[in-house]
Length: 238
Image (cartoon, rainbow, N blue to C red):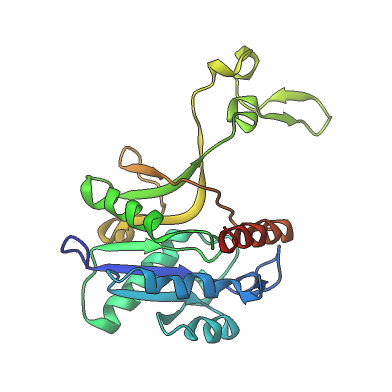
């Protein structure tokens, strides 16, 4: 528990990824990707329950090796590649509470695709939720100004170039740009009541963000794996 609140961690690990075949158990620096998250749970002694939500027996077998989490088998209707996070979390919460007979207060989502997270990253995200009147807290990283949303452009099917945002043509200097941030996938924290009633991870006016320091990579491509492996190598050779 943390601040008297019962906390459930959900690790969503669907089988059937298309960008990288069996991404959640693909080797990263010699270890299955999901092992970085299941073994990481040992660094969070305040977690009351942890589950891996999956539809894949190979992922489940690998996830159980760390002995830090149970398996919640997600039904077929929650196993497609267009299913949002919140229905998966709500299912995992319901199943976990039914199995344990205990009601949770906070749901934390740790995606296996962000293996560079630290315990302090997660703790600060959860603390932000517990200290405020928020429904959800996301971890984010500050976006390099070179990739600022206002500077983004698009191409029409006919090849016509235009700014993605109407404000784009008005920007002539970096000093005009307000800081912007992007989700890094390190951690999401929600009140359990919000998970039970919402269809989205975003709550207008009641969502906030925790800016996490350092370099974070959310793995979607083989190049991302190489970037994570370089970062892990640097960590172990400091």
